[in-house]
Length: 173
Image (cartoon, rainbow, N blue to C red; front, side):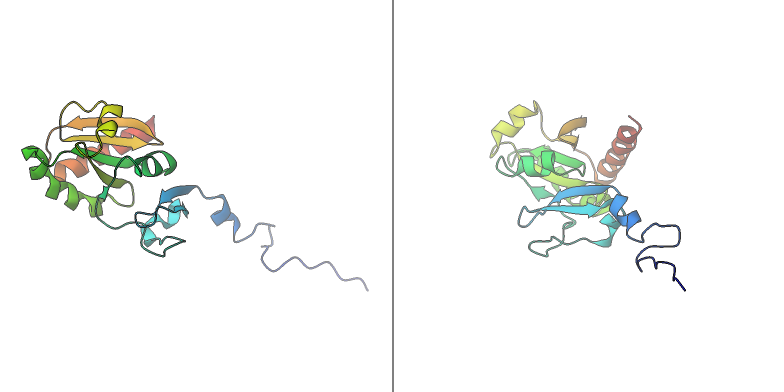
């Protein structure tokens, strides 16, 4: 008597694999805030506190990243997660007033987006590249392109509300 061929163990009766859902899920490409390695993270696993594949440090720290000209493009252009950038200067009173509010907004907005700070005195080329005329200025980037911009100091609640509103409207485009 001939036996019917057995299907591989990892295939379901309908021919799909339990791995199909994970393999076909959209991924985000994220730069590690510690070692700058690029990490592919499935969207469904962003909230599970993913770690870097190279240094094993958390990919989300709950604090804004301090970015300069050397590492800005890795986070803004190569990473696919939206990036909210605070352009500021150390001599700016409103910037210093807003700094703790921006810091407190980071854990509320991650992992939907990443927050970063750019000191326009230390990185004037970035300020020029984005046409920063007044500080503080928040710029929301997605895929390297500017989605929204807001000048002026904001409270934590205003930063969170503005960022969520801009993300929602950007998804609709």
